[in-house]
Length: 263
Image (cartoon, rainbow, N blue to C red; front, side):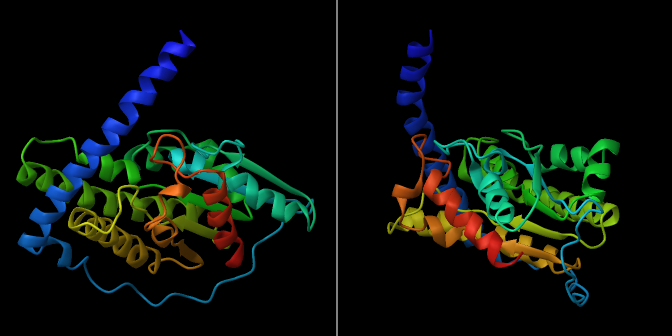
């Protein structure tokens, strides 16, 4: 049975990725023609207060909380670490450090919001020294299947983007309320379908617009930073795992390095 499942994913995963890339191209083209990718994201955010140092618990342990989707979970990393454990190992070289990873494959922003608003996770966030968040990739990728024609998909992507903007703000508000001082790192989105062709460039423009939304939302909260990932995978298919979608172990290490640069 395991061998049969492996063969199934070996043949179907590349096909699914190819279909998603084609849909993303059509959607990006429609959005570009409409001018939707240049729509304002609302009023300018308030000035960002100065960042404070990451707090340590009374017992001297540096605690890391990870929430979000499969990227936060470390899916695709053949070592099983993901960026979370890579960051943990770096802090353990300095002292005591622990990690709680609550990421789940496939989660969209409404589900991540429900997670961070729960009593247990709020308690974990209160005691965290560093909070790592990855959310949005599934909101975008899942919306690509909601419609047949490019115009229908474009409407679905636009609606998903609006919902995501509200949820991301609510996610950061909940985490900031639970813990006013810990550094929060939000991962930006990357394009697993990128390339030099026109389809790759147009599809990438949609993802970059979502990244702009993430950056502008982060500016509304103190001590929240965005970790860019788009450039790590641009024209670098060798950094993708066997599923041609998630990062491989080396790419997760690169993401961890960027997190460590701002923590």
